[in-house]
Length: 69
View (spheres, rainbow, N blue to C red):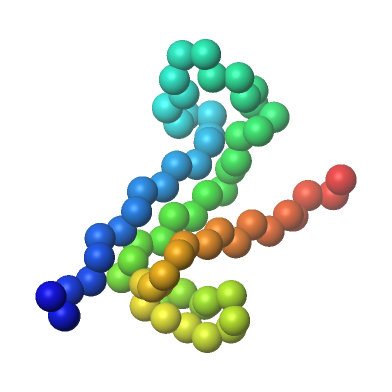
């Protein structure tokens, strides 16, 4: 059926308050903070520098290290 877009995927970010199943082995040194998950209806900058509302194809993550270590 042309004209129909596929549904989105799901996302999970490990934080201090996120769900962790029994037996989970990662400790707080792996937690992320200041997380921003962006809805598919928002215009984003693609890895190649162009902008797009939503994203077609495989997803991606942009991780920026801002620490001093």
